[in-house]
Image (cartoon, rainbow, N blue to C red):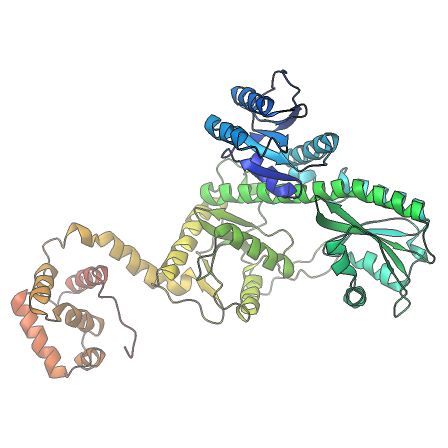
Length: 543
């Protein structure tokens, strides 16, 4: 599956690349170097302006890239930010103009971009243990360990262990727990946080030394890993004695190489997410169209499924909602959440597992059910305690991929009814199922089909509406209340806060204005739908 220039730039981050002039959905499948006067390559290439030395050269490169239908042009400052260069890019309407942050090597750019593009072409191979930057990280950890003669771990900015060197048997219990759990233990994090370690890592590139701590924690030498001013991670070495300055300088050089690897890992994760999002979007829209290719429904977990539309009352942008719900899913154990944006809404796909069914994983442990409908219920209850405005709506069960478009439309329909105030916001559960709201959906669909704007089809309501507007009478509201409480004038009068005799008087008068046979069930149904379309909807008890 191809990736776009926008996806590529967003995945690498603003500390590395920045889009100056976007070019829609321009795709990228390769990287090409362009020297002054050289012919630019093929459609879909990302052209690197290595030899651009002035404004005229930048504009000329953009023009040649446009003729070749290239996906984008990458320039360093000051040319990428030059107003005349940017104007030329906009007038050409493609390719995209991208700025490379200063002090970045073109050789590193080629390696990083080619690696990300290659992995995006086959995202299913980008797992831990496959050839790529993960393997390189372990090699770099061993290199760092040899430089300072001490065991080393490489961690990201969230204190997750990405790689570690050999000889970890000579470390302390905290390091062993870190490697086994792939994350620094909470009590160890508290110790380092109290010493201001993470605050210094986020702000500075200087090495940090920490003394021995409680529970046998040995001293640490910590080298920040940064790129373009952004903190990406760190190298942690368990040291028992001071490290010579020249060794620290060598370790800092390793950190510079690590920065490129961490950028590539982050970019691959971002691209993989976009590929997954794109596949799910196609599947929800088209169902099992072909059964093959990158959008195939065969990549889904075993069904049946529920399509979920996520929402919030403040109308948060769908991209921000995607980031929010992905974070929530990861926090509650769904490590590969099936989320995508479609037609301006955020959708998810969960498995509807029969109650009591708990599959066993290959390791023999019972699955906690992440990504199932029951899991979603639990998550929404937990999230509701902190943010009661978040909610989710699901369509009916989809038992085959070709039913997913129908289920998607139903979830979106419920979402829109909630947003329009036609369905109440879910209470403590935060979840609305189609089974719980089917009656509202039926009435809303029928009301929309009535087409009140096209006229009242010769029915009695046209005369009643004209009489109400001319004389200020409440005949439409009276008729609606009587229909809602057919056979019980006491309840209808109570709803209108009038005496039952007043209700009977109004009914006689409106029959004089527009005679109608209210003994017919078909007539009563048609009138009620028309009244709903006119705004005389059912009123809650106690109104």
